[in-house]
Length: 217
Length: 301
Image (cartoon, rainbow over all chains, first blue to last red; front, side, top):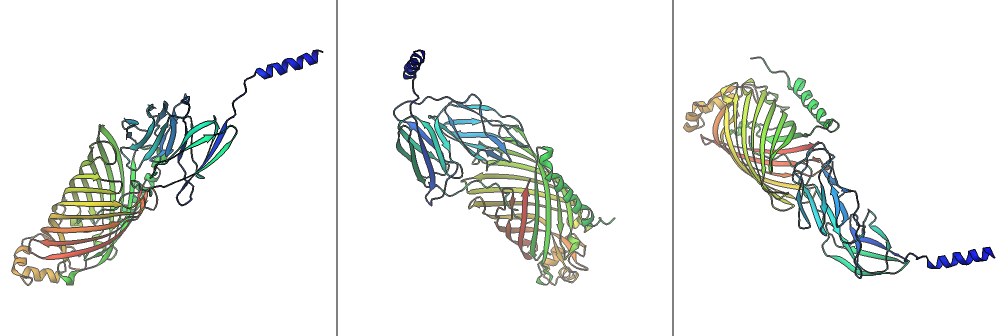
């Protein structure tokens, strides 16, 4: 009698426990138009039917200056994220950006912790060093918590995505044409998307020393 | 005058010592940048002679190590302090070997932020030159004004005006000249770089002649204008390109241009190949041409 009552009590309680909504996943493969995997592409899903809840990290994201380069090259973050720019080199750097999403300049500083800045506007922020022309990096500020950066394999798997309609965007620093499409995420489903993007040839300000020059002496 | 010690015994190890110090600069966390250059040049008419009989061709090897410190002053303005040591070695005509050490100060104004902001820089320097030809040993003062601008990721241009004055032990080597030159650089990509430059030098320079040719010049056998001018210039028997060869100082103009292909071997190393051509006319109307092919190795620490 007591065990039967206990069983019914547990069953009744279980019926009232709210179940977590089933969530889906998206596996995105980013390739160039030759079929080669593309690294450092930012894949993001922006909900079309609901406004996402954004929770920027409590600690600042780090973009280092090391060996006269920015590390990492591409940093995707949520709107409202703080980013710190520590200088790990022995020489000075002067970090700046002229991008509309975040225009700033950190005066020349030596080894140590650089300033921490708040990135509160969505968009692409191109970073540079005013002393070393070849130093370039990008901050991709997003209005969605669903994003990843592709590794060398070009494969990004976004998980725990609530069902619904989304705009899938792919960004790359050398992207020629916009790469965006609408996808529908079903509960407990893994959607696979392969996106081919056209990239500009690699150009950049040369880092290796300039030549000897000339001139009769 | 006491003969300077052999270059190899002192200055080459000194250059290597400086380079070795620079190699360890990172662990020492010194806020300096260092640069090493080594080049070999095939020079046609290295003797800078107007008479074809006096043209001499030879290789010339040069090394340079430099360390520099960048100090910000106010927004957009930096002070660069640089010291360098340089060796010149002419294997076939070793009398022309030399070593120099110098220090430079450069004020650099960058008008704006980023790679596309124009840069104006002014530089002054002082160098001591120790040469195997004792009369060429002395102190050189330099000054320069340079404007440079990047127009695209690939294209850059610069315009330079500079001046130098060498106060040597002997009068034939006291030279003063100024130059105006410009260059255009095209980076095809991260690896390949092309540069074209052009300019002119106005002022004094040294040239060389064998004893026989020199005697003919002074005697008027190369023309009255040449004799009239050459009998007024400073000269000295230096054995520069052979026994009895004379080095003399003239005034004139030299037009030069160069073309350089500089592939990057890595992030901090490049291997430039340069062709340079000069055409010089002195006050007496005598001309000479030089063609130089240079292969270099540059590394930045």
